[in-house]
Length: 196
Image (cartoon, rainbow, N blue to C red; front, side, top):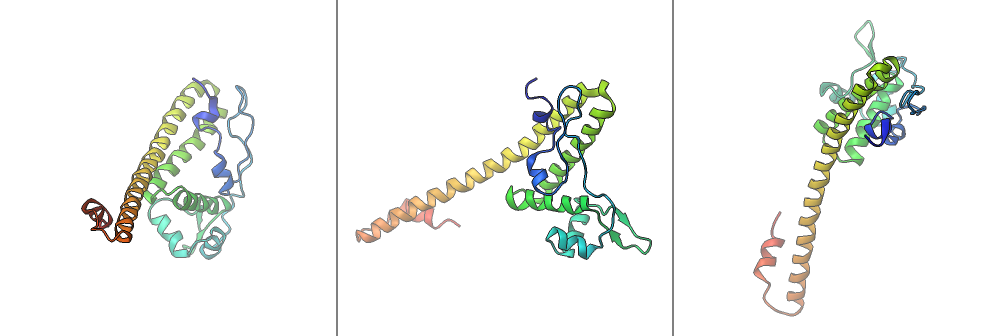
């Protein structure tokens, strides 16, 4: 197998780090834990409004993410009020990154988050059970392949959308040329241009 733990997804991706998940990569050699490092403040101290403001979303959005199972408050106070940690806020940043920048829908976001959560568990298993490291790596490779399939499907959808835009642009140009030459518009181009 080539690539080692990082290629298998056991080292946290840069996008996760950039999205605010405060993990720092540690050694990833044969004896070092892949992706080990410090974590953000896990104390559930933020109220829902504070957490939403820190994450750049509305409280309604935060509740919606919870309804979908994308986010679970770290703790619920005695009166039922939710409390959020820095890690919870980082998870919302990650959701937004996957949705807004990568272009995944929330179902796909959920699949990616579940995969990343499992990879985090595997990083712990890598450290705590060295005898299981081959199994850990095999599972990490499978998870990584699933995540790649999600991204490839999104890429294909974008390629198809772009191809449609390019086809319509050609039709517009042909219609414009016909109009400027005072010629009848080509029927095929009219049909393409009329598509929604």
